[in-house]
Length: 348
Ligand SMILES: [Zn+2]
Image (cartoon, rainbow, N blue to C red; front, side):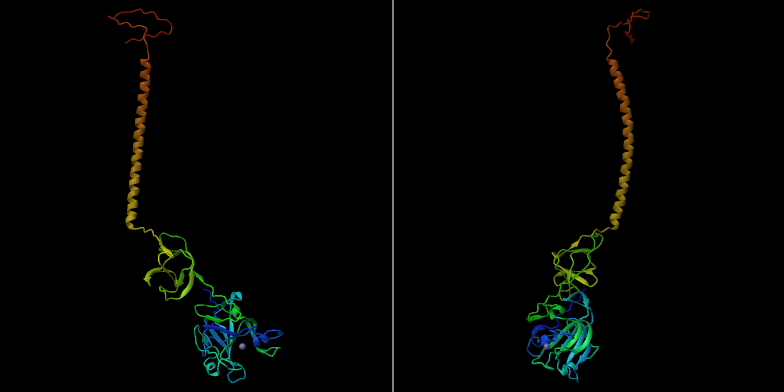
Protein backbone atom coordinates (compact mmCIF):
# COMPACT_ATOMS: atom_id res chain seq x y z
CA UNK A 1 0.00 0.00 0.00
CA UNK A 2 1.21 3.53 -0.80
CA UNK A 3 2.41 5.64 2.12
CA UNK A 4 1.73 9.32 1.57
CA UNK A 5 3.61 12.17 3.24
CA UNK A 6 1.01 13.79 5.52
CA UNK A 7 1.21 17.34 6.90
CA UNK A 8 2.53 16.84 10.45
CA UNK A 9 0.50 19.41 12.42
CA UNK A 10 -3.07 19.12 13.74
CA UNK A 11 -3.69 22.81 13.04
CA UNK A 12 -2.19 24.50 9.97
CA UNK A 13 -1.43 28.15 10.51
CA UNK A 14 1.26 29.29 8.09
CA UNK A 15 2.19 32.77 9.31
CA UNK A 16 4.95 33.35 6.75
CA UNK A 17 5.15 31.37 3.55
CA UNK A 18 8.27 30.72 1.42
CA UNK A 19 7.51 33.74 -0.78
CA UNK A 20 6.99 36.26 2.04
CA UNK A 21 9.12 38.53 4.21
CA UNK A 22 12.55 37.34 5.27
CA UNK A 23 12.06 33.97 3.53
CA UNK A 24 12.36 35.54 0.07
CA UNK A 25 16.15 36.06 0.16
CA UNK A 26 16.51 32.34 0.95
CA UNK A 27 15.96 31.61 -2.76
CA UNK A 28 15.35 34.81 -4.81
CA UNK A 29 18.33 35.97 -6.93
CA UNK A 30 20.39 33.21 -5.38
CA UNK A 31 23.41 31.91 -7.29
CA UNK A 32 24.61 29.30 -4.82
CA UNK A 33 22.65 27.88 -1.83
CA UNK A 34 18.91 28.05 -1.20
CA UNK A 35 15.94 26.56 0.61
CA UNK A 36 12.22 27.40 0.65
CA UNK A 37 11.15 27.68 4.29
CA UNK A 38 7.75 28.40 5.80
CA UNK A 39 6.71 29.25 9.36
CA UNK A 40 4.12 27.07 11.08
CA UNK A 41 2.61 28.67 14.21
CA UNK A 42 -0.03 25.95 14.74
CA UNK A 43 -3.08 26.91 16.80
CA UNK A 44 -1.39 29.99 18.29
CA UNK A 45 -2.36 29.30 21.90
CA UNK A 46 0.42 27.84 23.97
CA UNK A 47 3.06 25.64 22.33
CA UNK A 48 2.00 22.92 19.90
CA UNK A 49 3.74 19.68 18.97
CA UNK A 50 5.21 18.53 15.71
CA UNK A 51 3.12 15.36 15.25
CA UNK A 52 4.66 13.27 12.46
CA UNK A 53 2.09 11.29 10.45
CA UNK A 54 4.89 9.16 9.04
CA UNK A 55 7.90 7.65 10.79
CA UNK A 56 11.03 9.83 10.76
CA UNK A 57 14.57 9.28 11.93
CA UNK A 58 16.64 12.10 13.41
CA UNK A 59 19.71 12.64 11.24
CA UNK A 60 21.14 15.61 13.10
CA UNK A 61 20.46 17.81 16.11
CA UNK A 62 21.91 21.32 15.75
CA UNK A 63 22.11 24.29 18.12
CA UNK A 64 22.85 22.80 21.52
CA UNK A 65 25.81 24.76 22.91
CA UNK A 66 26.40 26.44 19.52
CA UNK A 67 25.32 29.67 17.88
CA UNK A 68 23.20 27.84 15.30
CA UNK A 69 19.46 28.22 15.89
CA UNK A 70 18.07 25.02 17.44
CA UNK A 71 17.17 22.60 14.68
CA UNK A 72 16.57 18.91 13.96
CA UNK A 73 17.06 17.37 10.56
CA UNK A 74 14.74 14.43 9.85
CA UNK A 75 14.59 11.76 7.16
CA UNK A 76 11.50 9.66 6.51
CA UNK A 77 12.00 6.00 7.46
CA UNK A 78 10.09 4.90 4.34
CA UNK A 79 10.01 6.30 0.85
CA UNK A 80 6.86 8.44 0.76
CA UNK A 81 4.52 9.51 -2.01
CA UNK A 82 4.57 13.31 -2.24
CA UNK A 83 2.48 15.66 -4.43
CA UNK A 84 5.67 16.86 -6.19
CA UNK A 85 6.33 13.64 -8.13
CA UNK A 86 5.04 10.23 -9.18
CA UNK A 87 7.60 7.96 -7.54
CA UNK A 88 7.99 7.59 -3.79
CA UNK A 89 11.14 9.12 -2.31
CA UNK A 90 12.73 9.83 1.05
CA UNK A 91 11.46 13.12 2.46
CA UNK A 92 13.81 15.30 4.49
CA UNK A 93 12.46 17.89 6.92
CA UNK A 94 14.21 20.51 9.02
CA UNK A 95 12.45 21.97 12.07
CA UNK A 96 13.90 25.11 13.66
CA UNK A 97 13.23 27.23 16.79
CA UNK A 98 12.56 24.50 19.40
CA UNK A 99 13.63 25.65 22.84
CA UNK A 100 16.74 24.14 24.39
CA UNK A 101 14.91 22.12 27.11
CA UNK A 102 12.82 20.50 24.40
CA UNK A 103 15.67 19.87 21.98
CA UNK A 104 17.62 18.04 24.70
CA UNK A 105 14.97 15.29 24.67
CA UNK A 106 15.95 14.04 21.23
CA UNK A 107 19.18 12.78 19.72
CA UNK A 108 20.70 11.63 16.47
CA UNK A 109 19.53 8.17 15.31
CA UNK A 110 16.27 8.32 17.29
CA UNK A 111 13.09 7.35 15.45
CA UNK A 112 10.05 9.58 15.81
CA UNK A 113 7.20 7.17 15.14
CA UNK A 114 3.94 8.39 13.65
CA UNK A 115 2.04 10.36 16.31
CA UNK A 116 5.07 10.93 18.58
CA UNK A 117 4.66 14.18 20.51
CA UNK A 118 8.13 15.30 21.62
CA UNK A 119 9.14 18.35 19.61
CA UNK A 120 7.42 21.58 20.65
CA UNK A 121 7.40 24.84 18.72
CA UNK A 122 9.58 27.46 20.37
CA UNK A 123 11.31 30.81 20.20
CA UNK A 124 14.99 29.88 20.05
CA UNK A 125 17.06 32.19 17.85
CA UNK A 126 15.57 35.11 15.98
CA UNK A 127 11.87 34.35 16.57
CA UNK A 128 9.14 36.76 17.64
CA UNK A 129 6.71 34.05 18.81
CA UNK A 130 6.37 30.29 19.15
CA UNK A 131 6.60 28.64 15.75
CA UNK A 132 8.49 26.11 13.67
CA UNK A 133 10.61 27.33 10.75
CA UNK A 134 10.38 24.38 8.35
CA UNK A 135 12.00 23.18 5.15
CA UNK A 136 11.03 20.06 3.19
CA UNK A 137 13.47 18.53 0.73
CA UNK A 138 14.47 15.57 -1.41
CA UNK A 139 17.84 14.32 -2.62
CA UNK A 140 21.36 14.85 -1.40
CA UNK A 141 22.16 17.12 1.59
CA UNK A 142 24.96 19.64 1.07
CA UNK A 143 24.87 21.27 4.53
CA UNK A 144 23.75 24.42 6.30
CA UNK A 145 25.20 27.01 3.95
CA UNK A 146 25.09 30.78 3.82
CA UNK A 147 23.95 32.02 0.41
CA UNK A 148 24.90 35.12 -1.55
CA UNK A 149 21.95 36.98 0.08
CA UNK A 150 23.45 36.26 3.50
CA UNK A 151 20.76 33.71 4.49
CA UNK A 152 21.64 30.37 6.12
CA UNK A 153 19.98 27.61 4.13
CA UNK A 154 19.51 23.89 4.72
CA UNK A 155 20.72 23.05 1.26
CA UNK A 156 19.49 19.87 -0.37
CA UNK A 157 19.36 18.76 -3.98
CA UNK A 158 15.76 20.01 -4.21
CA UNK A 159 13.82 22.18 -1.75
CA UNK A 160 10.04 21.70 -1.86
CA UNK A 161 7.15 24.07 -1.24
CA UNK A 162 4.88 22.91 1.63
CA UNK A 163 2.15 21.86 -0.84
CA UNK A 164 4.73 19.93 -2.89
CA UNK A 165 5.98 18.01 0.14
CA UNK A 166 2.77 17.12 1.99
CA UNK A 167 -0.76 15.94 1.43
CA UNK A 168 -3.43 16.96 3.93
CA UNK A 169 -5.32 14.34 5.90
CA UNK A 170 -8.38 16.43 6.75
CA UNK A 171 -9.38 13.95 9.44
CA UNK A 172 -6.18 15.04 11.24
CA UNK A 173 -5.31 18.59 10.15
CA UNK A 174 -7.60 21.59 10.46
CA UNK A 175 -6.56 24.38 8.11
CA UNK A 176 -6.67 27.72 9.91
CA UNK A 177 -4.43 29.56 7.44
CA UNK A 178 -2.64 28.06 4.44
CA UNK A 179 -1.30 31.51 3.46
CA UNK A 180 -1.67 31.13 -0.31
CA UNK A 181 -0.65 27.47 -0.55
CA UNK A 182 -3.18 25.04 -2.01
CA UNK A 183 -2.82 21.55 -0.58
CA UNK A 184 -4.07 18.28 -2.01
CA UNK A 185 -6.10 15.88 0.14
CA UNK A 186 -4.44 12.54 0.79
CA UNK A 187 -5.48 10.22 -2.06
CA UNK A 188 -7.76 7.33 -1.19
CA UNK A 189 -6.07 3.98 -1.61
CA UNK A 190 -7.70 1.08 -3.38
CA UNK A 191 -7.11 -2.40 -2.05
CA UNK A 192 -8.13 -5.93 -2.95
CA UNK A 193 -7.65 -8.19 -5.98
CA UNK A 194 -10.95 -9.62 -7.24
CA UNK A 195 -11.10 -13.24 -8.41
CA UNK A 196 -13.27 -15.17 -10.92
CA UNK A 197 -16.66 -16.62 -10.04
CA UNK A 198 -16.35 -20.11 -8.54
CA UNK A 199 -19.54 -21.80 -7.28
CA UNK A 200 -17.53 -24.28 -5.23
CA UNK A 201 -15.95 -21.49 -3.07
CA UNK A 202 -17.37 -19.16 -0.39
CA UNK A 203 -17.63 -15.93 -2.34
CA UNK A 204 -18.87 -12.38 -1.81
CA UNK A 205 -19.28 -9.73 -4.50
CA UNK A 206 -18.50 -6.05 -3.77
CA UNK A 207 -21.10 -3.97 -5.65
CA UNK A 208 -20.08 -0.38 -4.80
CA UNK A 209 -16.80 1.49 -5.32
CA UNK A 210 -16.73 3.34 -1.98
CA UNK A 211 -16.78 0.47 0.50
CA UNK A 212 -14.13 0.83 3.21
CA UNK A 213 -11.60 -1.93 3.70
CA UNK A 214 -10.35 -2.25 7.28
CA UNK A 215 -7.65 -4.23 9.04
CA UNK A 216 -10.17 -5.97 11.33
CA UNK A 217 -13.85 -6.87 11.68
CA UNK A 218 -14.97 -3.71 13.47
CA UNK A 219 -15.86 -0.09 12.69
CA UNK A 220 -13.04 0.92 15.05
CA UNK A 221 -10.40 -0.88 13.00
CA UNK A 222 -8.09 1.08 10.75
CA UNK A 223 -9.27 2.06 7.26
CA UNK A 224 -6.98 0.75 4.54
CA UNK A 225 -8.79 2.55 1.69
CA UNK A 226 -11.65 1.53 -0.57
CA UNK A 227 -11.95 -2.05 -1.72
CA UNK A 228 -11.96 -2.66 -5.48
CA UNK A 229 -15.33 -3.76 -6.90
CA UNK A 230 -15.63 -7.44 -7.82
CA UNK A 231 -15.75 -10.97 -6.46
CA UNK A 232 -13.66 -12.23 -3.53
CA UNK A 233 -13.20 -15.63 -1.87
CA UNK A 234 -13.92 -14.93 1.77
CA UNK A 235 -11.81 -16.54 4.48
CA UNK A 236 -14.14 -15.90 7.41
CA UNK A 237 -17.49 -14.32 8.25
CA UNK A 238 -18.53 -12.71 11.54
CA UNK A 239 -21.28 -10.46 12.92
CA UNK A 240 -20.20 -7.22 14.64
CA UNK A 241 -21.42 -3.61 15.05
CA UNK A 242 -24.67 -4.60 13.29
CA UNK A 243 -22.89 -5.69 10.11
CA UNK A 244 -21.74 -8.93 8.55
CA UNK A 245 -17.96 -8.78 8.23
CA UNK A 246 -16.09 -10.73 5.59
CA UNK A 247 -12.36 -11.28 5.61
CA UNK A 248 -11.61 -11.23 1.91
CA UNK A 249 -7.82 -11.28 1.94
CA UNK A 250 -5.08 -11.50 4.54
CA UNK A 251 -5.61 -8.44 6.80
CA UNK A 252 -8.51 -7.04 4.74
CA UNK A 253 -12.07 -6.94 6.11
CA UNK A 254 -15.28 -5.45 4.69
CA UNK A 255 -18.69 -4.82 6.25
CA UNK A 256 -21.94 -5.69 4.52
CA UNK A 257 -25.37 -4.22 5.18
CA UNK A 258 -26.80 -6.37 2.36
CA UNK A 259 -26.52 -3.66 -0.32
CA UNK A 260 -22.80 -2.85 -0.51
CA UNK A 261 -21.96 -6.45 -1.24
CA UNK A 262 -23.77 -9.75 -1.60
CA UNK A 263 -22.85 -13.31 -0.81
CA UNK A 264 -22.84 -15.56 -3.86
CA UNK A 265 -24.53 -18.98 -3.75
CA UNK A 266 -22.38 -22.05 -3.50
CA UNK A 267 -23.09 -25.47 -5.06
CA UNK A 268 -22.54 -28.16 -2.44
CA UNK A 269 -21.79 -31.65 -3.83
CA UNK A 270 -22.70 -34.21 -1.12
CA UNK A 271 -22.30 -38.03 -1.10
CA UNK A 272 -26.09 -38.37 -1.34
CA UNK A 273 -26.17 -36.54 -4.66
CA UNK A 274 -23.29 -38.70 -5.97
CA UNK A 275 -25.32 -41.85 -5.17
CA UNK A 276 -28.36 -40.35 -6.86
CA UNK A 277 -26.33 -39.62 -9.98
CA UNK A 278 -25.10 -43.26 -10.14
CA UNK A 279 -28.66 -44.58 -9.74
CA UNK A 280 -29.95 -42.31 -12.51
CA UNK A 281 -27.13 -43.41 -14.82
CA UNK A 282 -28.16 -47.09 -14.31
CA UNK A 283 -31.79 -46.28 -15.03
CA UNK A 284 -30.85 -44.52 -18.26
CA UNK A 285 -28.77 -47.53 -19.36
CA UNK A 286 -31.68 -49.90 -18.64
CA UNK A 287 -34.10 -47.73 -20.62
CA UNK A 288 -31.64 -47.62 -23.53
CA UNK A 289 -31.48 -51.44 -23.56
CA UNK A 290 -35.26 -51.62 -23.56
CA UNK A 291 -35.31 -49.22 -26.50
CA UNK A 292 -32.95 -51.48 -28.50
CA UNK A 293 -35.17 -54.51 -27.78
CA UNK A 294 -38.35 -52.63 -28.77
CA UNK A 295 -36.63 -51.45 -31.97
CA UNK A 296 -35.91 -55.04 -32.98
CA UNK A 297 -39.51 -56.05 -32.17
CA UNK A 298 -40.76 -53.15 -34.29
CA UNK A 299 -38.47 -54.21 -37.10
CA UNK A 300 -39.86 -57.82 -37.00
CA UNK A 301 -43.42 -56.52 -36.96
CA UNK A 302 -42.65 -54.21 -39.89
CA UNK A 303 -41.41 -57.21 -41.92
CA UNK A 304 -44.62 -59.09 -41.14
CA UNK A 305 -46.70 -56.06 -42.13
CA UNK A 306 -44.86 -55.84 -45.45
CA UNK A 307 -45.55 -59.55 -46.10
CA UNK A 308 -49.21 -59.12 -45.36
CA UNK A 309 -49.44 -56.03 -47.53
CA UNK A 310 -47.95 -57.81 -50.52
CA UNK A 311 -50.44 -60.66 -49.96
CA UNK A 312 -53.28 -58.15 -49.97
CA UNK A 313 -51.97 -56.68 -53.24
CA UNK A 314 -51.80 -60.18 -54.74
CA UNK A 315 -55.30 -61.05 -53.61
CA UNK A 316 -56.72 -57.71 -54.73
CA UNK A 317 -55.37 -58.24 -58.23
CA UNK A 318 -57.15 -61.63 -58.32
CA UNK A 319 -60.46 -60.10 -57.35
CA UNK A 320 -60.24 -57.86 -60.37
CA UNK A 321 -60.75 -60.85 -62.77
CA UNK A 322 -64.04 -60.60 -64.70
CA UNK A 323 -65.56 -63.60 -66.30
CA UNK A 324 -67.27 -63.61 -69.73
CA UNK A 325 -69.02 -66.79 -68.82
CA UNK A 326 -68.81 -69.80 -66.53
CA UNK A 327 -69.68 -73.43 -66.81
CA UNK A 328 -70.15 -75.93 -64.06
CA UNK A 329 -69.25 -79.54 -64.98
CA UNK A 330 -72.06 -81.90 -63.98
CA UNK A 331 -69.82 -84.99 -64.21
CA UNK A 332 -66.29 -86.03 -64.81
CA UNK A 333 -65.68 -86.00 -68.53
CA UNK A 334 -63.65 -84.55 -71.36
CA UNK A 335 -64.83 -81.10 -72.46
CA UNK A 336 -63.83 -79.18 -75.58
CA UNK A 337 -63.63 -75.38 -75.13
CA UNK A 338 -62.53 -73.13 -78.09
CA UNK A 339 -60.33 -70.20 -76.96
CA UNK A 340 -59.41 -67.04 -78.79
CA UNK A 341 -55.91 -65.56 -78.64
CA UNK A 342 -55.09 -64.13 -75.12
CA UNK A 343 -58.25 -65.54 -73.57
CA UNK A 344 -57.55 -67.22 -70.17
CA UNK A 345 -59.08 -70.34 -68.68
CA UNK A 346 -59.67 -70.56 -64.90
CA UNK A 347 -60.77 -73.85 -63.30
CA UNK A 348 -62.19 -73.84 -59.76
ZN1 LIG B 1 11.07 31.36 9.22
